[in-house]
Each structure stands twice: as structure tokens, then as C-alpha cells.
Image 1 (cartoon, rainbow, N blue to C red):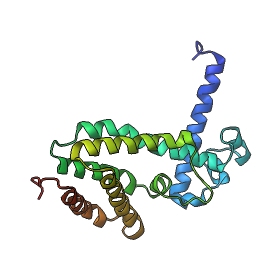
Image 2 (cartoon, rainbow, N blue to C red):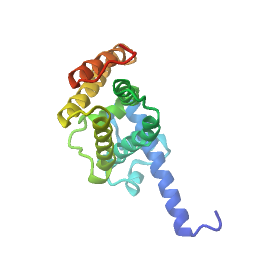
Image 3 (tube, one colour):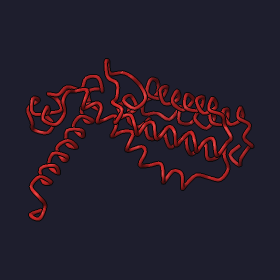
Length: 202
């Protein structure tokens, strides 16, 4: 650390503090609810005063912005392993793709709400924060079209299908598995509509 220029040490400390603030923000969002997040609650969790947060984030919406980017970046980082593990059969592959996104978001209501819904009044992610979600959607579109021959409209139905089941899970069966079980049925309905051949699952 002594060999690191002072400016770099300051940047490293600032980055570490920002991450600590984000971790605290997620803890508050998960315990009290995403829309109930306050700067005071976040600051208290890391032993700071609320005004001190402004040295790292310009506003509460700036914290939401960083959380949004972090959530989609975390999901994006899982995609290479997902793609390497995809079965060769297109219908089977679609089950794996659907389950992968479902499991990532159905286990965390606050993260799902920030990633996929608009529950925070007045908040829209910045272009920088939005970029990972765009990359994920474009990559999913390319992968699914290549696997199945689906059209863009088919892909949009797919997104609505998986997202709808996740919404139903959080609204009506949080902590349960009912809609996770229904996911395979939904995938098969979509695959039948697209014209994919049956697989061993059927």
C-alpha cells in the first residue's frame, strides 16, 4: 500500500465506501422495503451521519441508480456460465434460461422491484446505470433467436411470460414454489407456440 500513490489510495477508499453504502442500502431495502429506504437508515448502518453520504452520492435517487446498475451488472456476470451450461435441445435450453432469471430475481423482492418494476416514484435510471440491462436484453434476444428461430415478438412474449410469473410469485406466493413449478409449463406453452420440437422432459 505504501507504493500506491496517495491519489490512488484515496480513490480506493472512496470506492470501498461507496460499496459499503450500497450494501447498507440493499439491507435497508430488504428489511424495510425499497420505497422506504432513507439516507438516515443507510448512514446509521455504517456508522455515518446522513449528510456525509452526500460526499459519495448526490441524492437518494443516485443511490437507487447505483443499486440498479449493480443489480443488472451482477446478473450480467452470471451469463457466461449460463450459456456454457445450456443444453443443445432448444426447448431444454429455454427451460434453463427461464429458470436462471427466475431464480435470480424471485429470491430478492427489492432487487426484482428495482430491476424490473417502477415502484420508486420519480426514479429513472441514468443511461450509464441502464446500460447493463440493455446489454443483457440484447444478448438474451440474440441467444434465444439463435436457439429457437423465434421472432422479436416471440421474444417479447417470452420476457413477459417469465417476468409475469416472477411478479405473481412475489405478489401471491413469496417464499413458496408454486410459480417456479409453473415456469416449465409456461416454457412449454411458449415453445409449442414457437414450434419447437418436444424433448425428453415432455
